[in-house]
Image (tube, rainbow, N blue to C red):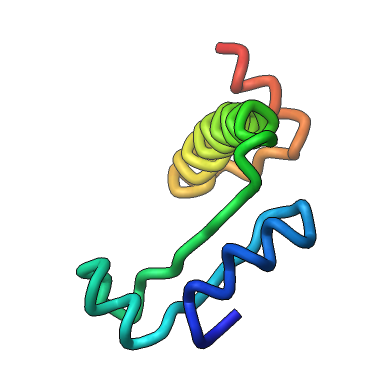
Length: 93
């Protein structure tokens, strides 16, 4: 969503799911979010636990994937040509 940023609230209330707003100049001024790298995300409060659980799951998966790719890159930079299976096995070591 774009302008106005406050429209994200009725969007979430009426739709029952999360919504993202890139904000408007008014919201950015009052929220000290003038950077183009800032977006506003809103979600229904009754789904807070669901969102937290999903974020936790994604964070754990990302940690594992980061380790997988870090170790795989180390092997490749050392001149090895690991298969995906070998890289997966290396996660256990």
